[in-house]
Length: 103
Image 1 (cartoon, one colour):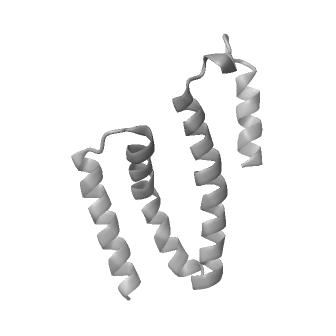
Image 2: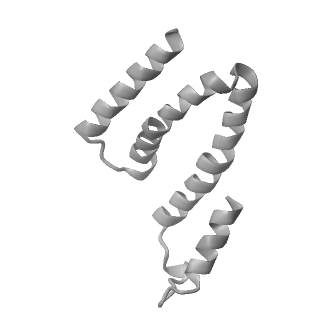
Image 3: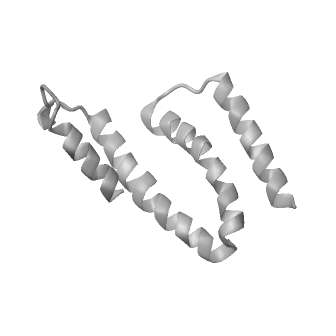
């Protein structure tokens, strides 16, 4: 994360017209907060707690649930639409996770 942040900061130096913080809307700030706190902080805390409780192998199965959570959070918090392809993909993911955890 630190290396990625440094690369982004270096890339920001080459933006021809930076956007002022006062011109960013609430949706942008909510997106940033979601990315930092829910995905970054809370996600990593839950991930490492899961590894500690159920082990690495079973924890890896839950990585496949990330796209489903992203679609649901974007629908609930950002008002984005959910498309048929996302529903089909989510159903396939849930089926695969269920199958892998049964064995």
